[in-house]
Amino acid sequence: MWRSPLLILMCAALMGCDAPVGSFAPNDVFSLTLARSRSANTEAAGRDAAAVTQALFGTPDQPKIPEGAKSVVDLKRLVRAAGAVSSEKDGTHLGLYREHCVTCHGIDGGGAGPASLYQKPHPRNFRHGVFKWKSTERAAKPTRDDLRAILQHGAGGSAMPSFAAVAPDDLETLIDYVIYLSIRGEVERRTMAAAIDELGYGDDESVDADLQLAARGETEGADVVKEVLERVIGDWTSASGQVVTVPEPDAIDGAAIAESIARGNEIFHGKIANCVGCHGPGGNGEAVMLDFDDWGKEYSTRLGLTPSDRDDMRPFRKAGALPPRPAEPRNLTQGVYRGGGDAATLYRRVTQGIAGTPMPGVEVVAEEDGRGLTRDQVWDLVRYLQSLDPRPLETGGPST
Ligand code: HEC
Ligand code: HEC
Image (cartoon, rainbow, N blue to C red; front, side, top):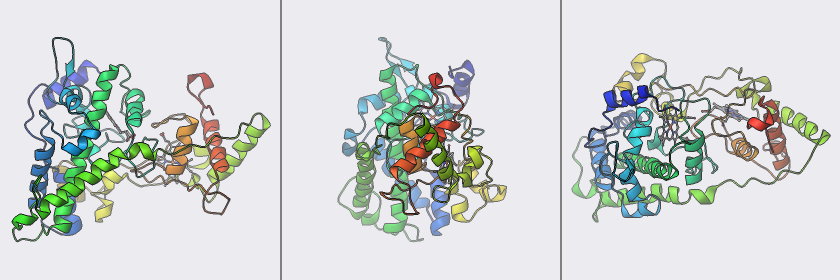
């Protein structure tokens, strides 16, 4: 079990799991990123976005949610997940997020908790609202089922552990809290950007009262915040309608399976899917590719900065950013999947790619057209991927 005395000690020493936390820190990394990308002064935008976010979402000890978010998260559950670690007389656990997640994901869900620095990949930064391991379309949010699956299974081959031993009710509470941190983090980022791009923040002159970001009221600044809220909450509400449907594969056996795998092998190494370009011949992970995930790219390559250059990264590191991590294409011959290796998951992986990483999705087409793959071809590819998995069937290896 991951919950070793060491982690609990770290939590106590570095975070103070049972100490009150008065407010979420403002998102200084994004403020600095915006300042560079827009060549603007983002101080006022950062400050006002943080104030509006606090008015709407409360603090690490006392969460709140705006009316519209009540269809997505439950305030009672948030209250149980938030705050210091403790138990009520009837055994109800409180402070679940700080008990189980904070050492890695950080108090604000920014992914830079005290144990995060040496992790590869880094713990997810929930504030971007981008998730990798989900059943929905690439640009969509995950469903609750997706979040439950990652909590139950962990992300194999990464530091994200399995929480299968946590009581089901506590898991639901943690799912709400992840969604809460993600919504609040994304609202803060989007209002900050809107302040610069739409409300005239960022010049040296002070901001007109009507244009000032506001959590409520009839001003233009309040309207912008309302639009951001609706958009972010709407994305979460619509996720369950964006689950990618997986068509049934033809029932085949014996020689037909071997032929399908052989076709999949060709597709893997062929021009359209070009999996080989990143995953290497036979999926051995040996192709040379230096690219980064989107979380780290935002404050490096996308600003024309070099992720490995300490001077380039210093101001961002000071603001609390982690060093950008290369996104390493997986060696597919080891049976290690972070997001699941079952047939339906692999079908979705091929067609959607992996959000937040360089792995693209392949378009599904009705007829072979030299650009996309037909459903049958995607199934050929999935069977080929499963044939690379060295694990015997009974331990969770290939199945169709
Ligand atoms: C020991 C460190 C660690 C702990 C503790 C931890 N995580 Fe993670 N978590 C990670 C890492 C690392 C990743 C990134 C995995 C990846 O990118 O594939 C991650 C990813 C995630 C994701 C993103 C999945 C996706 O689809 O992108 C969610 C959600 C998540 N963690 C929730 C939690 C919750 C909730 C807790 C507490 C119950 C928790 N984690 C505890 C390290 C940790
Ligand atoms: C541009 C580079 C790139 C291309 C092209 C690419 N991948 Fe990937 N792939 C990656 C990266 C990077 C990862 C690791 C992402 C992570 O875990 O953060 C990955 C991970 C995977 C995984 C593991 C998912 C998991 O749950 O852990 C599978 C399976 C996979 N790729 C299959 C494919 C297939 C099949 C193709 C061709 C259709 C393909 N990839 C094309 C970059 C690529």
